[in-house]
Length: 207
Image (cartoon, rainbow, N blue to C red; front, side, top):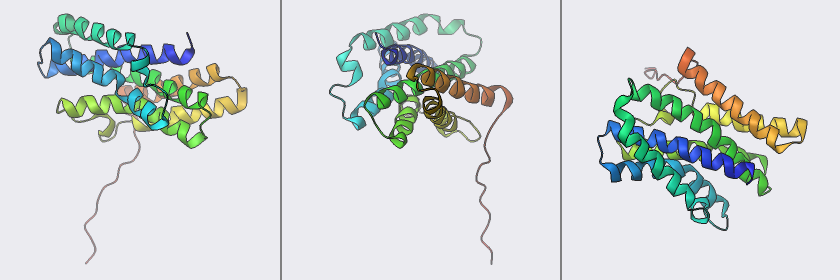
């Protein structure tokens, strides 16, 4: 069992929980829960594997991934009503999943000997595309595009931190841990303290 496989499996489970919570906000049935949970759980990894032209997409090679996501969906279907704030829980689950999925993408790209730019992009794609697909399908404003949110930025910084740690320490596992830590710290800071980057504000053209 490799570190990348563990990261993929953990991110699948947590992203599936977040997908199922969005399904609960849309008041879907159990099959809808499972569909949205699986879409969220494997969306980013699927984009990653297709772009990198891996021999087999990860959840096809490891069908237990779909079972894991389905279990998470059923769990949320029967317990979501117990949560005081489903949206707040969603945000934190999504933050944790992002911090696991980004190093998973980075690890896959590193294992395939990809150049640094591709490693960064694959980390971001793995972390962000599942949530993006979830929100679009459920007609929610995508978290990845919300004004003032450190989401893409957190994924980008985490992937860069992994490369820096790998260059300094020459240890892949340590680099992936650094990636997870930086990604989560930035996303959590955005949620708790309102950290954000300046946003573009249009001005009327001069006469």
